[in-house]
Length: 117
Image 1 (cartoon, rainbow, N blue to C red):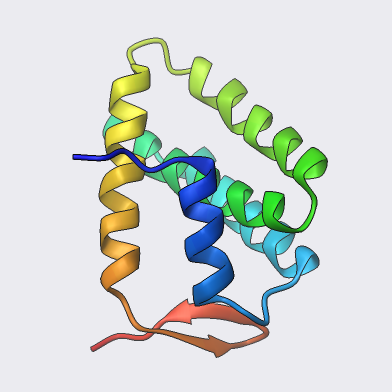
Image 2 (cartoon, rainbow, N blue to C red; image 1 turned 45 degrees about the vertical axis):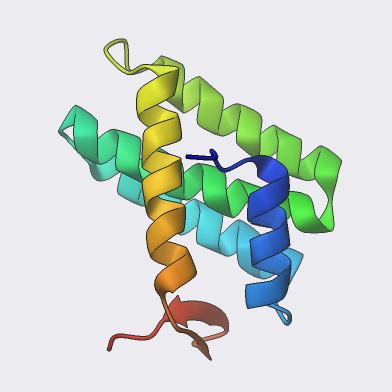
């Protein structure tokens, strides 16, 4: 299986969310960060970090330097979890992107949301 990368996520983001904005992505990142900080179990924290990394890639789409800061912040959060491994985070990113690529997306409340089917 080919792993997701920053480039593959940015390409997906550009195609899937053509009207997204930098400010919208920053707001989304802050929401995801709250979900991360409220998660208790390591598995849940890793899943929320995957979301943070995916949204940080969306930020990098608009401003690579600024996006790298958010990616770095995500990595700092990752290293706080001493039992986490890079492989577990990559697996979580791959799994979430597999799900995201199958979802239908619509714009609501100013940000894109996946549409429940």
